[in-house]
Image (cartoon, rainbow, N blue to C red; front, side, top):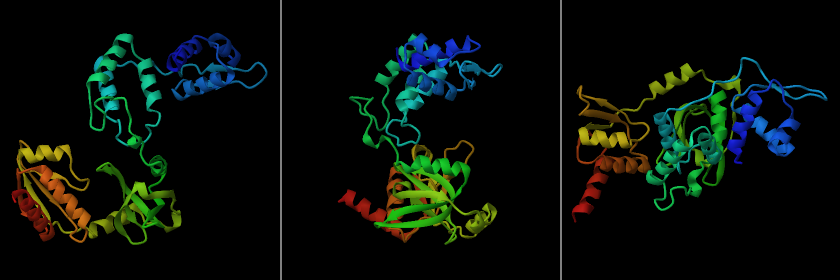
Length: 320
């Protein structure tokens, strides 16, 4: 009997009894004490409110009027959930180390006919990052940097933190107020307000070695941080007019800090205004690559000279 199937049967067994003991579970399902304990803990994690009784004749009982209703999915909901789950393969997303157990639990909630539909979808559908010859194969890069989950756990409690990153083989610590945590070009990045320098900075999560809370006494209020950021806003130096084809490309991918404003009610034309730092060659090169990705349905109103020159040199290579 598979684990998911066993747990579902144990849950039904428990729900039909006012009281049960660990020994009863062991005898009924022919499992060891350690397995019974693990299954009961997992059942509690699923939301069944169990109360343990201490003592020689102790056991467990289900808290009355507290059992969660059975979750039922429509066929459309089930396919939407499964396809979204498939699309996360090799996406370096946090909390997906237990991908297999999540899949087993999902399959354990549905009928055999629904399971067959999902197995067929798994064979037919392919997404970016999947191996067309073996869609179930996961690359070693499927899991994100191990510090990412720890970072998320901390920021859910407090956005003020001290991060330590390894740069040029040296460890450097920065006190920050976390503004955003985002993924761009398959890399997770921290956008934070440096509380010492009082400027916005970006730090790669891959370089993160430690993260701890920042002392309360030394903090700036979020309002003061936003006021300082608004005063430091850099002048716009890249202005583009996008036609419908370029807008379609923009929707497929765009850098984190860019946004468009539509200039007609049918959303067939748009304006993009942003800042590109000419002193950062990597940023200039990245924006040039992205501009070429947008295609020819773009008109340039304004552009840094370094970026214009780089694009002309690239286009010259294609025409010679």
